[in-house]
Length: 306
Image (cartoon, rainbow, N blue to C red; front, side):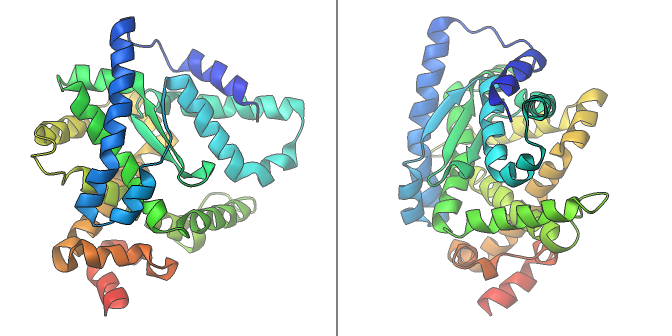
């Protein structure tokens, strides 16, 4: 896949960037980097995963615009999908793949605030989409530094997860490859059984855990947390019909469901056995909750903790 074309097409389709004065832009970039350095320690304090948080502190941080986010995402996708892309190798197919990818990524590039990318190898990399963070803070009258820290906490929770569970990357990749192999011979991807169900469950865990952590940062650390939570809820809820269609087509609806299902699972487990009990999930791939256990935390507790 030609990632240069991905960047060009994404820049064309992702819309006009918000106007930011040069000095303000430099201050925003500096603040994003500054807040990213604080986040791993906060995540470690909330979760009890101190050693993994120390490792996650070495995650490279890239402040990007929308098109650069699309390019980085395409690079990660290429590393995951490489065996399947090679089957349709050639200059023309590479260009067509790039255009298709860019067309799919452009709507997402307008909304994504940050993204932890584990597919570049541990400790992965953190992408912060500066224009979208700026717009989010401005639209909801939020303090820019609070937004930056809050988003970094969410995304670097993912970095902590992958450092706490060194097997996690291979777990995801192996099931993604199995799912793609199945998809070649099926009319649609099945997320109810087999590898699809395993991916759905682990993604609910990862996203729900990160959401739980960002929403349980002590007020002494983030006094504006309540306003941030309310703003993010409004941001997710407010969508015109076209945006709702895009959410459905691109899978954002499924991602939002992963947040809510995963948060409910993590909350129930932490309430009963604390973070120490929940953290057993990172100790062994056999401890990953199944799809049914996401909806029944007690079943997971009984199986893993006895």
